[in-house]
Length: 286
Image 1: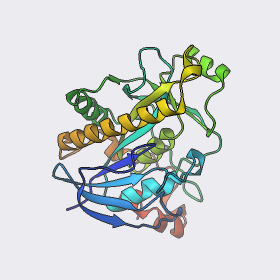
Image 2 (image 1 turned 180 degrees about the vertical axis):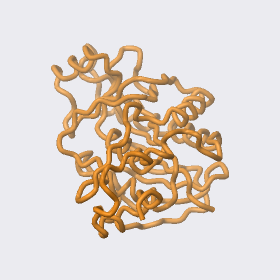
Image 3 (image 1 turned 90 degrees about the vertical axis):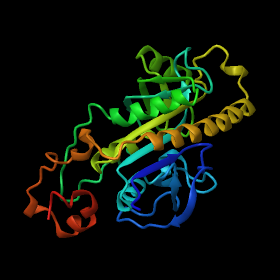
Image 4 (image 1 turned 30 degrees about the vertical axis):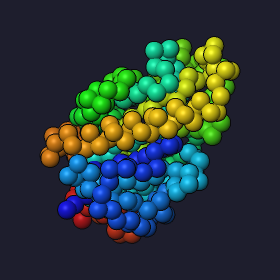
Protein backbone atom coordinates (compact mmCIF):
# COMPACT_ATOMS: atom_id res chain seq x y z
CA UNK A 1 0.00 0.00 0.00
CA UNK A 2 1.47 3.35 -1.06
CA UNK A 3 2.12 6.01 1.57
CA UNK A 4 -0.12 8.92 0.58
CA UNK A 5 -0.40 10.99 3.75
CA UNK A 6 2.39 12.54 5.81
CA UNK A 7 2.26 13.79 9.39
CA UNK A 8 4.80 16.22 10.84
CA UNK A 9 4.84 16.34 14.62
CA UNK A 10 6.14 19.40 16.41
CA UNK A 11 6.89 20.22 20.05
CA UNK A 12 5.20 17.62 22.24
CA UNK A 13 3.93 15.49 19.34
CA UNK A 14 6.61 12.86 18.82
CA UNK A 15 4.45 9.86 17.93
CA UNK A 16 0.99 8.77 16.77
CA UNK A 17 -0.40 6.31 19.31
CA UNK A 18 -2.94 4.77 16.93
CA UNK A 19 -0.34 3.92 14.28
CA UNK A 20 -0.15 0.16 13.67
CA UNK A 21 1.89 -2.12 11.39
CA UNK A 22 4.85 0.17 11.96
CA UNK A 23 8.05 0.30 9.98
CA UNK A 24 10.98 2.69 10.34
CA UNK A 25 12.28 4.14 7.07
CA UNK A 26 15.64 5.89 6.91
CA UNK A 27 16.16 8.05 3.84
CA UNK A 28 18.99 10.15 2.47
CA UNK A 29 18.34 12.99 0.05
CA UNK A 30 20.40 15.29 -2.19
CA UNK A 31 19.85 17.90 0.54
CA UNK A 32 21.08 15.82 3.44
CA UNK A 33 19.27 13.70 6.03
CA UNK A 34 15.74 14.36 7.29
CA UNK A 35 15.18 15.23 10.94
CA UNK A 36 14.60 11.59 11.89
CA UNK A 37 13.57 8.26 10.38
CA UNK A 38 10.03 8.23 8.99
CA UNK A 39 7.67 5.93 10.84
CA UNK A 40 5.22 4.41 8.38
CA UNK A 41 2.14 2.46 9.34
CA UNK A 42 -1.61 2.17 9.17
CA UNK A 43 -3.91 4.83 10.61
CA UNK A 44 -7.68 4.62 10.10
CA UNK A 45 -7.11 2.26 7.19
CA UNK A 46 -4.63 4.54 5.39
CA UNK A 47 -0.87 4.11 5.11
CA UNK A 48 0.83 7.19 6.54
CA UNK A 49 4.32 8.39 7.35
CA UNK A 50 5.10 10.24 10.58
CA UNK A 51 8.14 12.49 11.05
CA UNK A 52 9.30 14.18 14.24
CA UNK A 53 10.22 17.67 13.02
CA UNK A 54 12.78 18.34 15.75
CA UNK A 55 14.35 14.88 15.62
CA UNK A 56 14.44 12.08 18.18
CA UNK A 57 14.53 13.60 21.65
CA UNK A 58 13.81 17.09 20.26
CA UNK A 59 17.42 17.88 19.32
CA UNK A 60 16.95 20.44 16.55
CA UNK A 61 16.30 24.16 16.89
CA UNK A 62 13.87 25.60 14.32
CA UNK A 63 16.76 27.14 12.37
CA UNK A 64 18.59 23.78 12.35
CA UNK A 65 15.77 21.78 10.76
CA UNK A 66 16.56 20.48 7.28
CA UNK A 67 13.19 21.39 5.79
CA UNK A 68 14.23 20.46 2.26
CA UNK A 69 15.28 16.95 3.25
CA UNK A 70 12.10 16.46 5.30
CA UNK A 71 9.73 17.36 2.44
CA UNK A 72 11.85 15.63 -0.21
CA UNK A 73 11.71 12.45 1.90
CA UNK A 74 7.92 12.59 2.00
CA UNK A 75 7.93 12.98 -1.78
CA UNK A 76 10.12 9.89 -2.15
CA UNK A 77 7.62 7.94 -0.06
CA UNK A 78 4.77 8.96 -2.39
CA UNK A 79 3.08 11.38 0.01
CA UNK A 80 0.48 13.69 -1.56
CA UNK A 81 -0.86 15.38 1.58
CA UNK A 82 0.76 16.58 4.80
CA UNK A 83 -0.87 17.36 8.13
CA UNK A 84 1.48 19.39 10.33
CA UNK A 85 1.17 20.22 14.02
CA UNK A 86 3.13 22.87 15.89
CA UNK A 87 3.12 24.78 19.17
CA UNK A 88 2.40 28.53 18.87
CA UNK A 89 1.87 31.62 20.95
CA UNK A 90 -1.44 33.43 20.64
CA UNK A 91 -1.65 37.05 19.49
CA UNK A 92 -5.41 37.33 20.07
CA UNK A 93 -7.30 37.35 23.36
CA UNK A 94 -9.92 34.94 22.00
CA UNK A 95 -7.36 32.20 21.26
CA UNK A 96 -6.33 31.08 24.71
CA UNK A 97 -4.13 28.16 25.78
CA UNK A 98 -5.22 24.79 24.32
CA UNK A 99 -7.01 26.60 21.50
CA UNK A 100 -6.40 25.39 17.95
CA UNK A 101 -5.98 27.66 14.94
CA UNK A 102 -5.86 26.38 11.36
CA UNK A 103 -4.19 29.32 9.61
CA UNK A 104 -4.55 30.12 5.93
CA UNK A 105 -1.78 32.72 5.67
CA UNK A 106 1.83 33.20 6.73
CA UNK A 107 4.06 36.20 7.38
CA UNK A 108 7.80 35.62 7.16
CA UNK A 109 10.08 36.92 9.91
CA UNK A 110 12.83 34.34 9.42
CA UNK A 111 16.32 35.22 8.20
CA UNK A 112 18.17 33.36 5.48
CA UNK A 113 16.47 29.97 5.78
CA UNK A 114 16.61 27.86 2.62
CA UNK A 115 13.01 27.36 1.50
CA UNK A 116 13.21 26.21 -2.12
CA UNK A 117 14.37 23.14 -4.01
CA UNK A 118 15.40 25.31 -6.94
CA UNK A 119 18.57 27.15 -7.89
CA UNK A 120 21.91 25.71 -9.06
CA UNK A 121 20.85 25.90 -12.69
CA UNK A 122 17.06 25.72 -12.52
CA UNK A 123 14.65 28.55 -11.76
CA UNK A 124 11.02 28.07 -10.81
CA UNK A 125 8.40 30.33 -9.22
CA UNK A 126 5.31 28.69 -7.74
CA UNK A 127 2.13 30.56 -6.89
CA UNK A 128 1.95 31.09 -3.14
CA UNK A 129 -0.80 33.66 -2.57
CA UNK A 130 -2.77 30.98 -0.74
CA UNK A 131 -0.06 28.96 1.03
CA UNK A 132 -2.35 26.42 2.69
CA UNK A 133 -4.34 23.81 0.80
CA UNK A 134 -7.93 24.92 1.41
CA UNK A 135 -9.35 21.45 0.81
CA UNK A 136 -7.02 19.84 3.36
CA UNK A 137 -7.58 22.67 5.85
CA UNK A 138 -11.33 22.04 5.60
CA UNK A 139 -10.75 18.37 6.41
CA UNK A 140 -8.66 19.37 9.43
CA UNK A 141 -11.31 21.83 10.62
CA UNK A 142 -14.12 19.29 10.31
CA UNK A 143 -12.03 16.71 12.17
CA UNK A 144 -11.19 19.17 14.96
CA UNK A 145 -14.84 20.12 15.34
CA UNK A 146 -15.84 16.44 15.48
CA UNK A 147 -13.26 15.87 18.24
CA UNK A 148 -14.68 18.71 20.32
CA UNK A 149 -11.66 20.99 20.01
CA UNK A 150 -11.89 24.75 20.39
CA UNK A 151 -10.87 25.60 16.86
CA UNK A 152 -10.74 28.59 14.53
CA UNK A 153 -10.45 28.23 10.75
CA UNK A 154 -8.28 30.91 9.12
CA UNK A 155 -5.82 33.54 10.28
CA UNK A 156 -2.16 34.45 9.86
CA UNK A 157 0.79 32.59 11.34
CA UNK A 158 3.87 34.79 11.90
CA UNK A 159 6.95 32.62 11.37
CA UNK A 160 9.81 34.08 13.41
CA UNK A 161 13.44 32.98 13.51
CA UNK A 162 13.83 32.09 17.17
CA UNK A 163 14.93 30.24 19.15
CA UNK A 164 14.21 33.14 21.53
CA UNK A 165 10.59 34.16 21.89
CA UNK A 166 9.32 37.59 20.84
CA UNK A 167 10.31 40.83 22.48
CA UNK A 168 7.41 42.85 23.84
CA UNK A 169 7.87 45.39 21.03
CA UNK A 170 7.70 42.63 18.39
CA UNK A 171 4.66 41.03 19.98
CA UNK A 172 2.81 44.35 20.06
CA UNK A 173 3.77 45.02 16.45
CA UNK A 174 2.43 41.65 15.28
CA UNK A 175 -0.85 42.40 17.04
CA UNK A 176 -1.07 45.83 15.42
CA UNK A 177 -0.69 44.10 12.05
CA UNK A 178 -3.64 41.82 12.84
CA UNK A 179 -1.60 38.61 13.08
CA UNK A 180 -3.15 35.64 14.91
CA UNK A 181 -0.42 33.27 16.13
CA UNK A 182 3.37 33.21 16.20
CA UNK A 183 5.61 30.17 15.71
CA UNK A 184 9.01 29.20 14.30
CA UNK A 185 8.63 26.37 11.78
CA UNK A 186 5.69 26.07 9.44
CA UNK A 187 6.37 28.56 6.65
CA UNK A 188 9.34 26.71 5.11
CA UNK A 189 7.38 23.47 5.17
CA UNK A 190 4.48 25.10 3.34
CA UNK A 191 6.74 26.62 0.67
CA UNK A 192 8.58 23.38 -0.02
CA UNK A 193 5.40 21.30 0.02
CA UNK A 194 3.92 23.57 -2.64
CA UNK A 195 7.01 23.18 -4.82
CA UNK A 196 6.78 19.40 -4.35
CA UNK A 197 3.06 19.51 -5.30
CA UNK A 198 2.07 18.20 -1.87
CA UNK A 199 -1.06 19.54 -0.16
CA UNK A 200 -0.20 21.10 3.21
CA UNK A 201 -2.14 22.29 6.23
CA UNK A 202 -1.16 22.89 9.84
CA UNK A 203 -2.70 22.66 13.29
CA UNK A 204 -1.36 25.63 15.26
CA UNK A 205 -1.71 24.56 18.89
CA UNK A 206 -1.72 27.43 21.38
CA UNK A 207 0.40 26.83 24.48
CA UNK A 208 0.18 30.36 25.90
CA UNK A 209 -0.38 33.99 25.04
CA UNK A 210 2.65 35.71 23.57
CA UNK A 211 4.34 38.29 25.81
CA UNK A 212 1.90 41.08 24.86
CA UNK A 213 -0.68 39.71 27.29
CA UNK A 214 -0.91 41.40 30.73
CA UNK A 215 -0.93 37.98 32.46
CA UNK A 216 2.15 36.75 30.62
CA UNK A 217 4.55 37.20 33.55
CA UNK A 218 2.47 34.85 35.69
CA UNK A 219 2.82 31.98 33.18
CA UNK A 220 5.17 29.25 34.39
CA UNK A 221 7.14 26.68 32.42
CA UNK A 222 5.06 24.00 34.11
CA UNK A 223 1.85 25.54 32.78
CA UNK A 224 3.25 25.70 29.26
CA UNK A 225 4.45 22.08 29.37
CA UNK A 226 1.05 20.97 30.65
CA UNK A 227 -0.67 22.78 27.77
CA UNK A 228 1.86 21.30 25.35
CA UNK A 229 1.06 17.75 26.43
CA UNK A 230 -2.70 18.29 26.35
CA UNK A 231 -2.42 19.89 22.93
CA UNK A 232 -0.39 16.93 21.66
CA UNK A 233 -3.03 14.48 22.87
CA UNK A 234 -5.78 16.46 21.13
CA UNK A 235 -3.67 16.79 17.97
CA UNK A 236 -3.31 13.01 17.77
CA UNK A 237 -7.09 12.59 17.95
CA UNK A 238 -7.71 15.29 15.35
CA UNK A 239 -5.12 14.02 12.87
CA UNK A 240 -6.39 10.45 13.19
CA UNK A 241 -9.94 11.68 12.59
CA UNK A 242 -8.77 13.80 9.64
CA UNK A 243 -6.93 10.86 8.04
CA UNK A 244 -10.21 8.97 7.87
CA UNK A 245 -11.91 11.92 6.16
CA UNK A 246 -9.33 12.54 3.43
CA UNK A 247 -10.80 11.94 -0.06
CA UNK A 248 -9.16 9.32 -2.25
CA UNK A 249 -8.42 11.78 -5.06
CA UNK A 250 -7.20 15.37 -5.18
CA UNK A 251 -9.03 18.11 -7.05
CA UNK A 252 -7.04 21.08 -5.70
CA UNK A 253 -4.41 23.08 -7.57
CA UNK A 254 -1.60 21.85 -5.29
CA UNK A 255 -1.26 18.74 -7.45
CA UNK A 256 -0.23 20.87 -10.46
CA UNK A 257 1.68 23.68 -8.75
CA UNK A 258 4.77 23.23 -10.94
CA UNK A 259 2.92 22.93 -14.25
CA UNK A 260 3.80 26.47 -15.38
CA UNK A 261 6.38 27.36 -12.74
CA UNK A 262 9.66 26.15 -14.24
CA UNK A 263 11.20 29.05 -16.16
CA UNK A 264 14.52 27.54 -17.21
CA UNK A 265 14.69 26.07 -20.72
CA UNK A 266 14.75 22.33 -20.15
CA UNK A 267 17.87 21.66 -22.20
CA UNK A 268 19.73 24.26 -20.13
CA UNK A 269 19.10 22.49 -16.81
CA UNK A 270 22.24 20.64 -15.62
CA UNK A 271 21.85 16.84 -15.79
CA UNK A 272 22.90 16.49 -12.15
CA UNK A 273 20.09 18.84 -11.10
CA UNK A 274 17.58 16.96 -13.27
CA UNK A 275 18.55 13.72 -11.55
CA UNK A 276 18.49 15.15 -8.04
CA UNK A 277 15.10 16.79 -8.53
CA UNK A 278 13.57 13.96 -10.58
CA UNK A 279 11.01 13.05 -7.85
CA UNK A 280 9.76 16.66 -7.96
CA UNK A 281 10.19 17.80 -11.59
CA UNK A 282 10.29 14.46 -13.38
CA UNK A 283 6.82 14.66 -14.85
CA UNK A 284 7.66 18.01 -16.44
CA UNK A 285 11.37 17.73 -17.25
CA UNK A 286 12.93 14.64 -18.83
